[in-house]
Length: 120
Image (cartoon, rainbow, N blue to C red; front, top):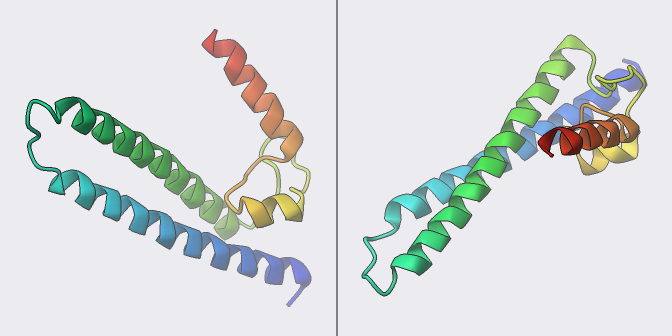
């Protein structure tokens, strides 16, 4: 077994743990939304704010889950740890912090700049 295979298995283990944790957070937020009672007139604004906050968290966690699933697919193909933008190896320190990363830091910055310009 070579070090790349070992490294990838370690990363897959981290991705699976991160996926489990993210799924549990999503389930918790879903239960929280279901348990919110009908607010009184005085509580309506606060309740609406809380619901919006929870829904924003749910959307963020769903995007994270999609990223994790995509990274797991890359691991199955044997391309995990390779940047989808330039093909270079993603810095292991970046993968340690963000195991679902599929772009190196430079490509990620370029991607974010392009998206920022496109939103204007």
